Image (cartoon, rainbow, N blue to C red; front, side, top):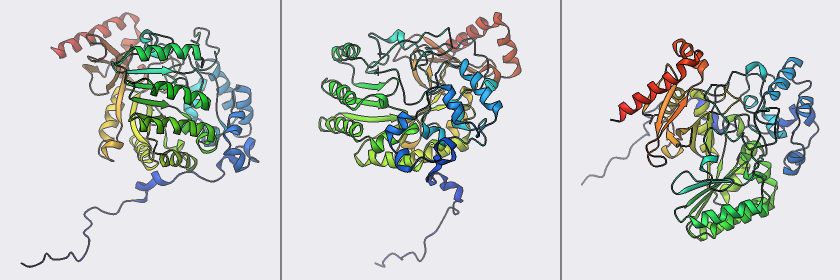
Length: 460
């Protein structure tokens, strides 16, 4: 039998890629923070120190605006001052985050949009917006624990974060009070007595196998508190999975790099869980590729080296990541630094950030475009967290969607059977006919009833 011929050359069926296809590997590095006059003389050792980052985190509007003097115009400073006066979230910005913003173009910068509100870009709230849009408190058997899904619960361990996002879905509780007189924030302090009630409830419910530890942000827990919560949950026999949720990797990777006590506390819980055949992972929150730097990669490499699984949850935001180019680069860059893209949320219906919300249709179009650009396990699910407590629904799984009125109707048969949950697109992004109807309060109830009637008809 004749041997098979050996190929003389490799056949390239696809043309060579353009260098732009590899942009996800190009991460910001060097002493980029020195572009900020306030940090011009800060050494690398100081900037990498998590204690320096925490000590110099800006928590007062006056200090933030002082740090920006010389970088932005007086008009921008006045715009930001007015923006904070109407914002539901207080100011809290780390030096690292401040240094990532392009202050030559602050109005358009995607990171500025997320953390520093401007009065000039503010839009009226949709009439159906509210603070606890996901109805988390209604599903809370004890303070700070939301039990909505059959086998999963959300443990709100505290009500502070390393930074405060403008678009926070828990603006009803997270951070200090603001000038918004209508919002009296719920207190969810890191409190052992409150935690004890949560541990007891979880232990009493054998169906609970999956616990998300969030807040607030677990980055703001002390090392001993990470150990206490993690080990108490591991000691409950039926708890099989645990997720520590944090924005910290996007806004202060220095904690992973230089806070060895905190890092080891997390690693010990992860490793103990593995020995018990239980899953302990980290869920983080990157919204734009500019949030991922070489420092981010170093922090994630440290976690990866210890076998820690990291997944990401992104919030879809207008002017931040609502284009294919940005979302594609974000997802590819996440995969490059060993973070699994998990969810992309259609922006929750919270008050005070209507300029950041976009439409359900935008998410549907993006999901179609993204799928197939990378491996399936690195392709996120685009979801609507159904207002009113229906839980996460795949964005295109609606029972009815009217792109003119912007009303989409979802059901959640495994969470709250028989109920309908409505999401409302921003009015300013609707066709003129839809905007006219929303301008007339007498039409609001009619539009909602029409949507419900059509949803019910589609299910028959």
